[in-house]
Amino acid sequence: MTAKPILPLLLGSALSFAPLGHAAEVLPAASDLPATPELPDPLVMFDGTRVTSKRQWFEQRRPELKRLFEHYMYGAIPTAPAQVRSAVKVTYGDFLGGKATLKLVTISFGDPAAPRIDLLLAVPNQRRGRAPVFLAMNFCGNHALTSDPRVPLTRGWVYSSCAGCQDGRATEAGRGSQAGDWALEQTIERGYAFASFCSSDVDSDRAEVSDGVYAWLANQRGAEGATAQPRDRGTIAAWAWGFSRCVDYLVTDSDLHPRRIAVVGHSRNGKTALLAAAFDERIALSIPLQAGCGGTAPSRGKVGESVKQINDRFPHWFNGAFKDFNDRPDRLPFDQHGLVALVAPRPVLFANAVEDQWANPAGQFDILKAADPVYRFLEAGGLEAQTMPPTNRLVSSTLGYFIRPGKHSMRPVDWQAFLDFADAQFGIKRDR
Image 1 (tube, one colour):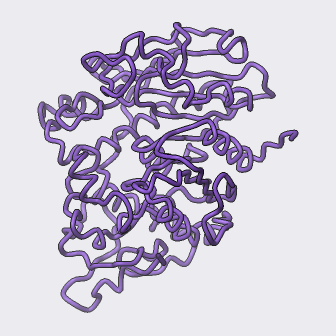
Image 2 (cartoon, one colour):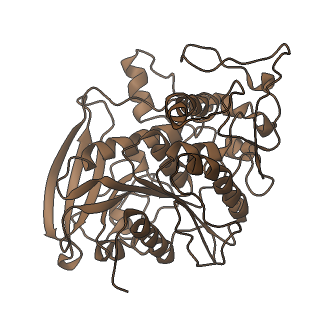
């Protein structure tokens, strides 16, 4: 796929669009948008004007793209609460056999009815200065990432597929069940800190239940039950809000480098990691793994999951407007290369597996190629590959790519690529 301008936009006809200068301006319905089979040019404004300066990108096009993604796809990411309180509840200096210090942090928002995020943070004991940190959202609870009994069981709902789940709740049987996937010790040994929180701390992943940040905000507005319907909920945007609340704490921890925060996520959590980085400029680097449709694959793609399939199966992930593109994704005024462009000039790595064609690995490579002109325009480097690399070979340019043999999963080999990419982007030299 090659990027094309979405507008001339029928200029001079009955339908033309002005620049999006104010949030109050009404955006066209999906049915009124022109069909654009190719990927829209991210350097062309909604009214057809080409971006010609970095200032125009940051002051006009970037805010416009953010608004378009919120309006037509993800819904608005909630604003930061008036109060964000972080408390280190306990610290253990002997985590992972003495290789790390474990901190259990509670992030709250001044209202007992508000969600509360339990953040696990492991910091390497052997390091020079402040440590760079990986921040990730997990599916099954912090306790699933390590067998250490001092990490509490997650409080909220967990998936039935999580080991030890009984009636939607965590049990001791799930402790350490995903430790092999997360490679904490490998990360610590490479000098990186690791932080993680459970998605259900922010909003449980259930179409029929809204029990997190949206329910809390609705109750504050006196609109109880307003979020019960999944069509317009936007759970991925809520999870991105959770990433930002964790960043609120991480930038204050004196053991961590506040300008070296990398976010990582697998599958739906990878969609969230990319969205969070696009909207929160404190995040230095984003690594979505096998994030597929609605994340790193083109909505216009013909391989793997489609917009209609993801909306039918997970109606709560995106907003109501996105459903209007179920049968006409070519009417979207953007595609996922625009989300990558919102991260620019910060680095992004797409990671995939050969057998996970549902996530459209080749289409994801096309998305990086289509985002490349924005990075070049901003003099930030770009994708230093014209074709997909062989398996297990990392493309470590500002826009990076990695694909390995195997299926839809997160494995230690993925973490090896994540760490190598972060080293390259943060300028960390190691003895080989």
